[in-house]
Length: 177
Image 1 (tube, one colour):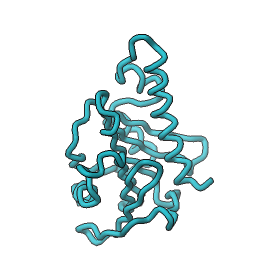
Image 2 (cartoon, rainbow, N blue to C red):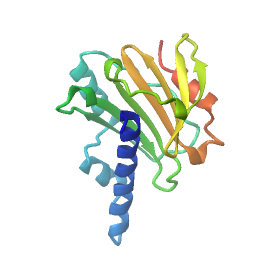
Image 3 (spheres, one colour):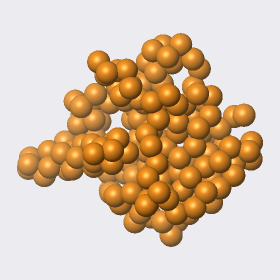
């Protein structure tokens, strides 16, 4: 199975397991308890772990989608296989499950391949970088490379009327160049 599909399946399984955990108890555990149990921490701590591991500063977008989020978490995965090291930043809403936005960042040399069957369109960012817009497994995804990293901005398809490809382009362009 290609790495792109694997990454998204892993993300969906994580979200599904969190949902199951919440429904298995009479009183669902708040995200503040659940997410740290599976390795998430503050975005700042996860970014710091990523920067320390790769010995390079990381720039995140300054903008987020124009929908409401109640929580944001980060997780740096330092796998025993170097090619799987990545940062995930997740924005969620505990009242609106469709309000789910993710940023996945990995080294360019271990980038996930893009399969043509998922590609919808390509765009040019304000700095001339080409970004690819795709639809994969319930998410709309904008993929681009900069500063030796591959960025993937993913938004739940259920909010595609509020978060358009142009919105994701604006978010990508908000990275301090």
